[in-house]
Length: 118
Image (cartoon, rainbow, N blue to C red; front, top):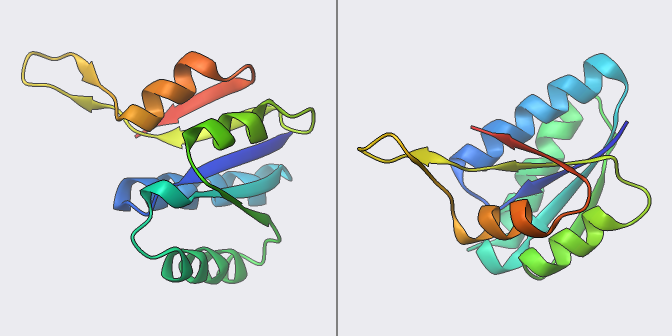
């Protein structure tokens, strides 16, 4: 399976990324990491942390820089990906799920299967 995982620099996104790396290592999935520039405070630091995590797992993965959630969806909708993995979704005090703007956009617009991981 060819998987793209989104990173926005948050701790939740890194936790999801690390689980995607573990899964790719176990299953042989091809992994691509999409750094969503509009959500990053420091793209260089995030890219470095991504490379370190991949190196520690002895896993090779492409790193793509996308400007925003629209480019993320365009990347995922390309012919080469089977799944897009995004972090997000928090429970409100009333028990409903609340999504970030990016997560909601991806869920509404991606044509590939989307895995929402928390």
